[in-house]
Image (cartoon, rainbow, N blue to C red; front, side, top):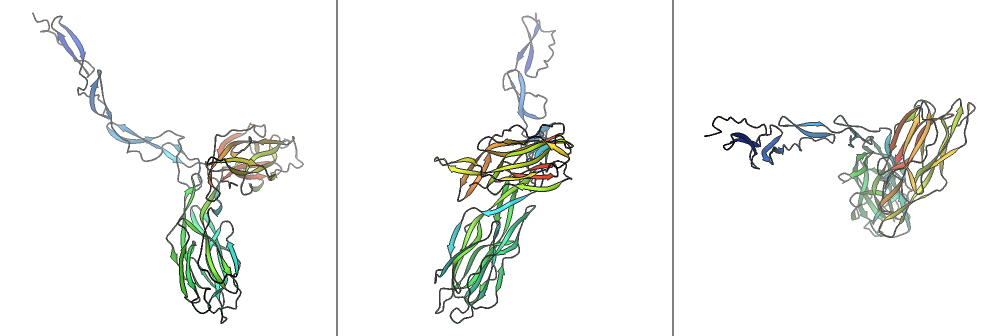
Length: 495
């Protein structure tokens, strides 16, 4: 008798199981399908579904190329790739010249702290030199443009005496100040270096680079007559500058296509040059020899390096009190703050707030690296808040970073004035060399006890300096007390 003749076994819910009737018992029995059997997990976002150990599953649809933004994540919905918002608070780059500590919010990059920003200074890291000619060396000179300026052209007259006829004299290097406004580089005529050569001459002629360009090379001629070996012609080669980056990632200059401009031509003479600055460099000054006329001429060249500065949002009352921008001297970083807590009319508010600065000194550690130490040279920024007759104050307090650490961040409690300040400190490390310049980074921050005791106001911070910078000073509003405070950060010049 066939015990299974009248048995109808229902299909199992698991697609990787199968059912059959046991002819010996007439009972339905479930077994697992062989691994690798095709199945359907009913998930449109998987493909190539197979059974494995009784479970149906497939390979997830690859949507990795769908999301293009830093704040987006790819997802699959009903078999189609779509884009969803990533986690809030993740780091991103808003691509703002003035924004820093940008974070993701609802799938988009939100601009972080935006205070004032710009370049604290522009200088030349390395120096290379090349002479145009050798002649009758009389008096050597080296003329370098001031900090933040570079040559943008030359002035000269042409000698009229028989002996020096048509040679360059009264030669001057014209320096322009490099300015950056919202990522656009301009060069503004700023100063003349000393005049070289005193011979009787024609009126002075000026040859400047096109607008917002700088000198990157020279060529010219040497007088080929009986009184040879004097500079008789000089042609500047100029190039435009552009800048990339932002206040968070740092700035980098690029030098555009160079071209000769109209020269100072007394006589063509024997050609010399072109004498170009090394790739990536611009002129930073001139050197050579001169007496009655210009005997020799050369270029000092260097790499442009922009020191960024950012000011975090202002904490406190941004509309009252006098305004001060307090930056430590070049090559110094704040490491300590001092102040007093008011009583009476200005109860709980900080006054007589001052900042102590120290040099950042790098010493060769003998292993190819650098040891960074803090050297206090006694520089203190002026106190903000005069106390006055309306209030009294407790004794002065000072909060100092640990040995060989520097200020890199700030937190503030404020009502309508500044009640409490807490600084963040960290050790600095450097890479590079004195000739090529140092790049700075800071380690794990810590905080000494806060200055001030009132925490009833609004807490703001911590505002951390962008990595690669440290505190440079403060923006403050002040009268009898400290009305408002903001941290300024910049790349320290390492000694």
